[in-house]
Length: 269
Length: 296
Image 1 (cartoon, chains in turn purple, yellow):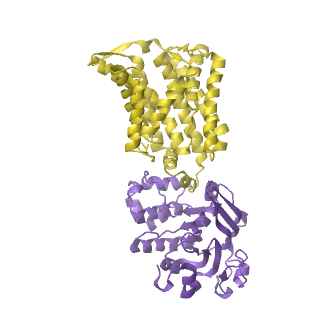
Image 2: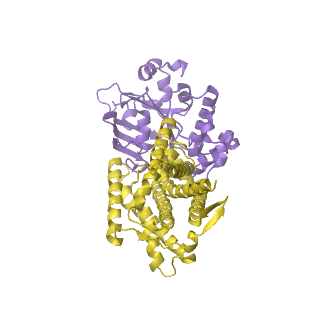
Image 3: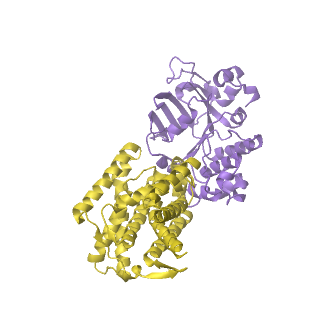
């Protein structure tokens, strides 16, 4: 989190809005920021989707990006990764380990250790599972032991076309592709969307294990998963950061959760 | 019966030419979303370079290994020109579709003008090997060997392309990129290198088509690329953008239909039937026979 947020100062990126922050005492102590997003604005096709978003991602654990549908969570991840569409623009600052990365080519960012799991999995349907994984290899020693350890199903279905996998299996493949390689930060967009409860648990376990080795910026709507994984939470509303602080604190306050996310925290998702 | 055999082999020869031009065009459009109207120029460059090499390049000639060397020279020339066109003229315009079309149309017109300025507007006799004029008897039909040469060349190119797409890393990148280019980039792959590669491959296949069209038609002219390109575009749309095997099937359908209708109907009716086939396929399967997918 930003220093001013930890001290309870109003968030500078959302003047006049209902931005609130958590108490410093509940934040992860001493967790240095790996990713610093400052005043990030994104316009797409004339629409001002993000309007000066600022937040930080700690160098360990899971930071969850929350918000109602359509507020710009996925747009934030895509802007960080340089995937803002051609009819749009992204301005502001995004620093990874202190280095400015906004505007750098996507492939260079990924090679530099920014792993990305998109919202709709985006596996290559016409390629086999093995080919999808082979395509994602970025080093001479891809960690197949980790991937097949987390998702044994992928090993069994190596010759099967990815398009014929179930939604859960496709999500495992999508996660497997990034976990093959060493990463500095994972950007993961709604990994449990549309999955059966059993598969949600498997995916959450895999994310939990992955987060032990690499920090994660996670967009997630399933509050049960958020409760299990989240260290810090950033809530976006109307294109701006509306709340930042420990995820635990957000979910412990049903009124706050309901006002920010329009869901009942007690019941999960 | 012998007429049907002859028409079939001649139609397949024509299909071979269409396939050689369309395969590269299809990969370029499927991967890079570039509608390359200058693709016919690569064919003309290959034809003229082969023609020039057969008369001027030491060791090259109109027969035997000398002709193979001349064709290899033509293919290399087409490959180099295609790669340069992508690097210099297309790459700065990847996000600007209208400009791409204008540039490639302009380049195709300028290319024809340049060839006319350099070699004259009239067709030039092509130095084809004498054995290509021989005939063999096939199921009672006397079939010229040049048709068989075209078919064999297209089958070999089809096999090489499929093997490349299936067994190499760049082939994997191209197949994935045809399906979802952005996701390939999001896996850390610089997809622009694959763009240059598919342009080069397309240029090589088109240049080979240029050399073989010289053998088939007996002459080479500055406009031969443009006239074949129209049917190659139809083949690409029928076969499905980005699908090499789809292009092969569509080329056979177009070549045979055109040949048979032109022979048994009135001259020119075959071309109309090809356009009708295009319309039917688009109504039935708007994305073409193979669809836009990572199909080898």
